[in-house]
Each structure stands twice: as structure tokens, then as C-alpha cells.
Image (cartoon, rainbow, N blue to C red; front, side, top):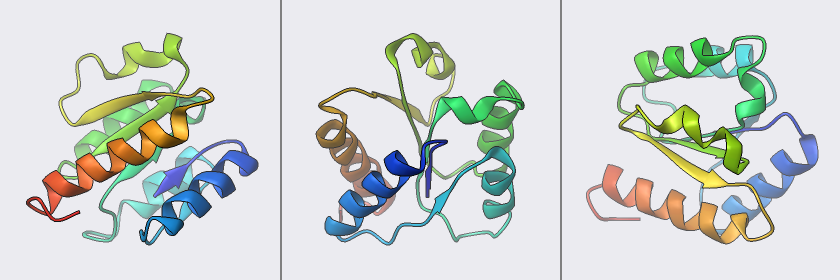
Length: 120
């Protein structure tokens, strides 16, 4: 699941990951994320835009971690937002910059490989 407040970024990430062979769906706000994770087993990975924390603040990330305990989360944000991940074990941070698509794909491959026991 890709979440991003910017529809162009959502569409780009969705297209790039689908080209890698992943089944991808996207959400645009915090409530959509919380509604989506209520279906057990339907999500293998969450790519999260920290801009969506508002108005939920860190409650959204805490709710995600509690509700989707076995689902890896990649926060795709700007360097100054890295602090969101410091205390969370299954949350990874990827800087949003000109090279982030490549780094994000590598992070997705890594997370999915660990989740499937080495089969990416």
C-alpha cells in the first residue's frame, strides 16, 4: 500500500512498483490507511508519507504499528522527518529526494524478501 498526500507522487510510486511486479494500491489520507489495515492479511507493506500524520500526528503511526504488527512500514519523507522512525523496530526510513525511487525499490525488495523468507 502506498500512501502519499501528493497524487502525482502516489501515481509515480504505484507505476514504478507495479513495473517491478508488485500488486499496489494507494490511499491519500490517514483515515483511508486505518480503514485499509482493518482487513487482516490484505497488506504486505506500507509506504507512508509523513505528511499524512496531520491531523493525526504520531497517533497514526502508533495505530498502524499496533494494528499491523507484522506489516513492515517504510516512511518515504524528507530528512528532517527521520525522527519518526527512531524508536520503532519495523519502520524503515527512505529520504524523499531525486534518487529516492531507486532507494525505495531496494527497501521494498528487502522488506518483502524478509517477509517471504528470502523470496522477493
